[in-house]
Amino acid sequence: MIARLLRRRPRSRSSRPKAVEEAKLELTPMIDCVFLLLIFFMCNLEFVKQDGLIKAFLPKDRGQSTGPSVTDLGEVRVKLLWCAPGTTIETEDRDVGEVVLKIEKNVYPRSGATPDWEMLYLDLVKMRDIRDRSGNPDALPVIIDARPLVPHAAVVGALNACVKARIKDVTFAAPERPF
Amino acid sequence: MKLRKSEDSENEVELNMTPMIDVVFLLIIFFMVVSELSTLNLEEIELPLADESEVLKSEKLDARHIICNVREDGTIRIQGNSYKKEQLADYLKVEADAEEREPANPSNPAVPPSKLYLTIRAHKDTKFENVQNVFDACSQNGIYKTRVMATKDE
Image 1 (cartoon, rainbow over the protein chains, first blue to last red):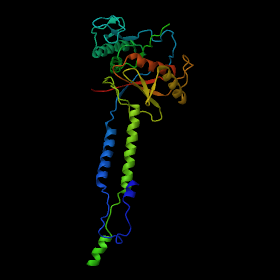
Image 2 (cartoon, rainbow over the protein chains, first blue to last red; image 1 turned 180 degrees about the horizontal axis):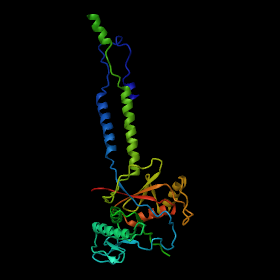
Image 3 (cartoon, chains in turn purple, yellow; image 1 turned 120 degrees about the vertical axis):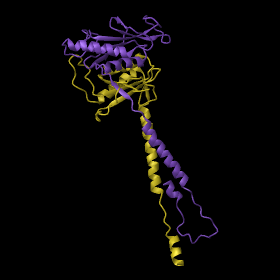
Image 4 (tube, rainbow over the protein chains, first blue to last red; image 1 turned 135 degrees about the horizontal axis):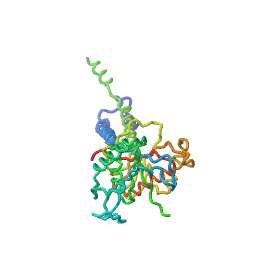
């Protein structure tokens, strides 16, 4: 519409005196800019990266009950602790701690700020195979029990190892609640 | 010859640019609005790394899903709005109630499972307790179809 108004001209040119120069608006640079803007916005939409997703479904049949866990028998508990550097002593200090990985009763062979997810994966595969050979029809339940101060990346690392090991029943331990 | 020349100058071929410019402006407005909307849901957050994560393409179009962003400082943001832990539970209750629910399980008859999907986009260095708050609010309202967003490569 703006363009239409700008482009309006007198109908009869002959009535005008020849000496007066006709005022013309040069539209070409504007169209150039407009096209550049259009291309920019179109490309910008393409730049939005499609991030990956990992399914982390919560147990459907468990609410906020404090009763005994359904998967007490034969479950694997992957513990992610927040410990003082070089130790397995838990700390409440976010700044000086590091992630320590433990699997149910066994202190994990390698601990530190970057737990070895490849070894966790191999361990989970071994445990899954033992479970499959035992003839138990249920999938091996794995519970990721992360302390509140542990960075989210470590939890996703453990979850990733579970997905890689084709563990179908992965749950998260409920947060500790004060009595 | 003279007459023809004057006729030519009268019937000068002009390209009418007006409709094209109108359309181009409309396109620009469309792309601006769309890019604005997409950034509302997907905030700039450094996601954790997970090589097993997958892009789910075969998602049912009718299934509603919420994207929940958790910033490094623990702020929970959905659709550009910030929520505290208690507010999040209330918000999810409203959203879950608006959606059809699955038949209730005998073990937890009070909260029937919701058909709603919830995707958590949490910063890689945020404390897990912040993510746990979201899981907690979900389980309170029967939302069990939760997923964690991650990047596939660095």
